[in-house]
Image (cartoon, rainbow over all chains, first blue to last red):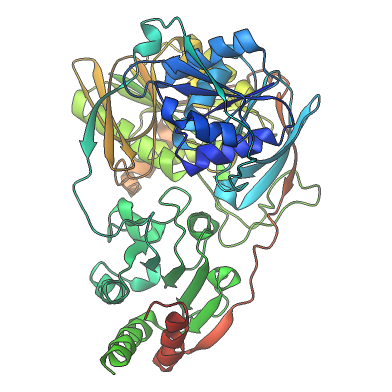
Length: 313
Length: 251
């Protein structure tokens, strides 16, 4: 059997991990930490036959969550333990791997079981893939976000079985002790339908006024490249890239951005990309659906003016 | 306090990744090298903590002889000394990497209050070396930290999550992995670079245990190059852009 760690049964990425794990072709059990019984029916429809609900501490505690999975795996002897390729999915599976001293493959896009198992996994934030052999048992892996679409298979209800792991004080040393709500409202980068973004070509913090103006007209979030945050023109929360936000808007408007792989790793989820750049040879155009060649300081205000003109008529 | 920051030499990939003929590595003939943005923030944080609390900072890397360049870069912003676990340049899997770091930490004369890593390496992105090191050393580990302070032997870590920030309080010694955005790293000064040339680098050659996550070959993702539709040049392109936006229902 395969054991899938469900971080949150309502979350798309956890559901993708379930679908991916089902692809291993074995009986599928899920492990949820802390009470989440209301989601049982949903997981049953995704092909899970047994849901193990582990009693856990209040709130997130990575080592304790991992210990629960380790103990459960000790009882069930799964051929694989699969988790979502989220911050917490990767963190918990890494703790599991350290505890059982087995290899773990993070952010896999496909897997072929065997001895050794063969996986295709993400490197460089998705700019490159790696074919790797996993020499371990159970096979431990996380599923790259959007490697598969979450699918129901219409199977029956899952049995729910409570489980209590023996947790030590050391397991509970790292836990969330306080939650501070975000202060700002506005359009968040991760959820925005439109993102207007500026790069080194914007030239200065003040230069972003034309980007902000267009973003406001389109109800868009403002983004930027790493060169911009490194220069201190924009806060890091605006950064799109491998080490910034990963976005998936309907359209991404990239102004004065060269298109380094670090940046493209953050915006490859965009459905359409419009690049505005004076250098027709810039890498950004290789990832663009639409191109405008020229100086963003002239082109972006002209687009804003045109939108106002069209809306006024 | 004593702080250790671990970094990894990686190529500056620029706009396009080209693989070597045997697909075992990125073609780096024309590329410079750097460390991950997360690790740059880790190095900056190490320097700030020592400025604030006193003590000493150390940078560690596992990598080829050329990775001394990255150790000097990190020392140029103010880290005091370096540990270089020298390899032949081949790929080390996360378990082998963690084992070598654990051995280096155990045999070092300095007991560390805080061991910093980037949340994940820029290249292989395995998300686990720090967790394995923490587990082997019996230390608490907090991941993905974007806010960090130390007071009375307690580390306060803030993690960005959907809807706000989660706070963790852990006792030192501890392992913490950081994300870019934790701070704005300083640029090295010329005197800093000169001082870095004279700072000590303790080099050793650890034994590599066989890979259990074994890289077979690198693969370029399919369909990553598109043919862009050129809407025009200069401000005259604005009407074409707006009609495209209108087709998407945005205007």
